Image 1 (tube, each protein chain N blue to C red):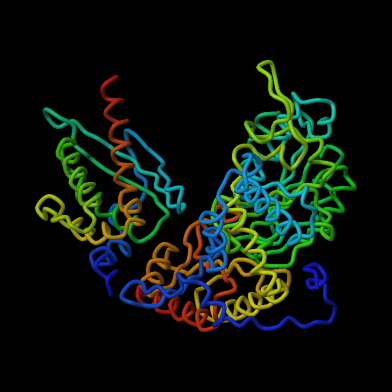
Image 2: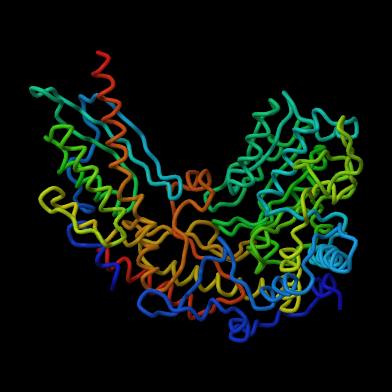
Length: 153
Length: 433
């Protein structure tokens, strides 16, 4: 059936066994995001560390209540972004958002997005795009706040 | 036989609806969806489908008598005015009210806001509005089971005026905890706003009893009947409520039309909510006076085409007989409670029998988020709703963030209930739950 393109095995696997789940310390910023339409919510923390010229995503920890798509997306996010310089992580973020807005026409870059390419099918179901993006928007928000904190330190 | 006599016919067993014949009246039900499957529409609680008779009434208005009602020195103006006012009369009869007690609004949400804003506007209105004024020390009483439309406007009223919001809690089966009445109802209570039928649990509170208790305490009573008027016989006099709100689009009628019933004596004394043309008596630059109700509460050019659609919906439902509609839904609900209740890991919110319980069946599937349940059911052609159904506090009170909800109406069948249950079983297998 068509929806099986959305519910790929990779996604179901991340849903059943979410990576990096839980709220950890230390962290530089914490945000709480909600999808008011369905009640999905995520609390997400970002920890940055200085590594030479620019900050690096040291850790992303989270606690969330939500559907398989939102949970799997949070898990994939942590795999992709932890350890990356913030600027590179922001590029991955941008590519993921573009994929979600591609209405099923996107041709995702597997080198950049790795497991996240499995979410291509989600873009065919407009009601689920917000689910996939919930943790990504939370991460971007938390990172912006963490960077602001660093800037004023 | 008049509508009210038919509704109160003693000893007449409700006849079964001829659902196949009814379905033929609803063009959208012949749609194929998702891999050429028949549409199984179980989301009438969100909005109902429309029969040709309602679509024709709206179209007929636009094609033959469209004009601005209550103005225009011409024949079409007369016909439009007649259509609008006759629609009002038919809608009034449908709920056992007088025509001048029916205010047309956009929907139930606007109708409830109308009363809430009348109460805050009363602060600066004349002495006749005294009984609507609320301020510090006064209380507005609602319940935990309310749809946001019958909760948020009251929160806002309290914020605007300094009054205190209080609420009944729900019991584990979703029913309102009436034991709290003694503590919650007092001379400080100015208004009780309560659901007539829950859009989540189907619970039908004892409205007449609550109205009696509220009146004894000196409070007004408003019923959110958005899920009641479409699904059960409603007689405002028998209920004893002061206000009652409902939406056309949930009862086979178009969007953009609903109604507020208000007892004449109260509407007479209420200040308006939305103002502008049509509701004025005399207008000068320095100030204006307003018409008597219901016109006082109907600003702007009247939505006559939509009102014609709502009146046609009332006629359609009257022809079916609201007792029969309620009996049909009770039968489907009982079937759903049993079929879904039989599935391991499925928890249904609300009472597990159909006693004082209408046709909203909201359920949680252990290990599968409602979004995912809804997605799989959608793939099977089954349309349900999957979220908090605009009753977030109720979900919190019942211990779940969100549920999957099926709602039934005149065009649903027992085969569709079977398909729903089978779909839920399939969903569980798909997610390995």
